[in-house]
Amino acid sequence: MVFSEPVFMFMFLPVTLLVYYAVPFRLKNAVLFLSGLLFYSWGEPVYVLIMILSTLIDYLAGRIMDKFEANKKIRKAALIVSVVMNLSLLGLFKYSGFFIDSLNSAFGISLYNPNLPLPIGISFFTFQSMSYTIDLYRKNITVQKSFVKFAAFVTMFPQIVAGPIVLYNDISKELEERKIDFNALSDGISTFICGLCKKVLIANSVGELWTTVKETDYSTLPAATAWLGIIAFTLQIYFDFSGYSDMAIGLGKMLGFKFPENFDYPYNSKSVSEFWRRWHMTLGGWFKSYVYFPLGGSKNGKGKTIRNLLIVWFLTGMWHGASWNFIIWGIYYGIILILEKFVFASVIKKLPSAVTRIYTLFAVIIGWVIFEITSPASELGYIRAMFGFSGAFSDTFTINILHNYSIILIIAAITATGLPLKLWKKITSGKKLDGICIAGEAAGMAACIAYLVDATYNPFLYFNF
Image 1: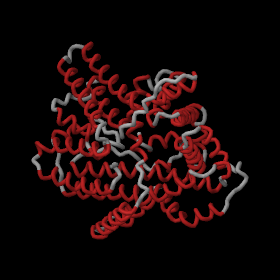
Image 2: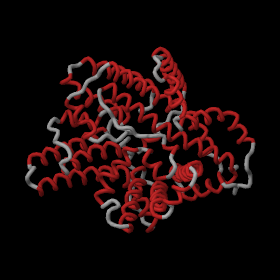
Image 3: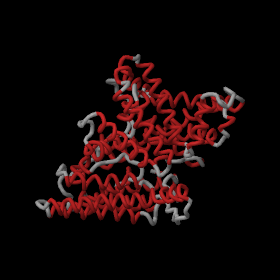
Image 4: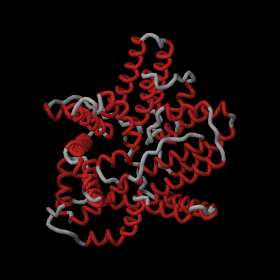
């Protein structure tokens, strides 16, 4: 069984919500904790213990810091234990195999690689849990003495496996007291259905195109087909991840929590720097708060700023996966951001917005090639195909793609700009169209269920991180 199995998802959600609403407030956090364990264990029946261990370590570290508030050495020791244990768990399950294979390849040795399966969402829940002890050490938050409440924060099922990364300070007040009214419930349902439609109806549809193109021989891939394929992935990863984030945010509203936004129409950006302020905003915020600023940020001169940016983007690449393509992808963005900050900043400001948008999309699309294709040689082969080195611009396969996918690609591209939502808000400004909205949401939900019942293609891309 896997998380994306429709039968489990559509049984789990309504039952959990009914139980959650039925119990008194003093039991709601316990329901969240237990439902989070059930949700995670459905996909990871053994590795749920890893999540429990991480939660317990950080809870105890927090209690020790609180008890010995005046003793800096003990507080620091508790923080070090928390950080080291969390990073060790992450390193063992996510990176040990990669480093062993790299050493074997580099030195011609034969170290044993246990090839441990990757616990789903481990990068999300370890970062989330670890941020609590760091903030507590900094005295930005107060200790949570209830293990159930702290565990509910870490294991909350809407965002446990694919974000957004929720910091303790984001929801600390709601853990103690929260109100669920009809407006919040209605808004949550709308946000959830919107996210589900983005994931199922758009991401899955364009993803099928990318899967087909990705499996072809890049040396014979026509340029037009290569561009159509990677544009499809560019749209797929946005609608997949932002769709899941919207579902998590919507479920959070239904539960009485306000999760942070994770996307702000990033493909509208006029620079790569702006793109990364709009894409996966909670991860960017995490690295700023817990890596970039502690290193000194941009306060200590150009040289150290460049160093700090390269460290952050190397780690950002590593966070996404234990593979050379992710490291290259992180360094690629680190270099671009350094160039934008110190070399091209004045040029970008002077250029027309249409030019800067095209430049940004081009840089991002090339980045997605590096991100998605694991072999550096294959990445280069695909990029060569994009620029016509295969010798052909199009073929019958290209025509078939355009015939089968042109409408969904156009819909996805326009929707990714946020234009349909802006037009809808403008048209409906000051008007009561509750009936139309409810009918539209019902139709969207029905379409998603119909798709999921028969679909064999339903990946969640960020479950792998």
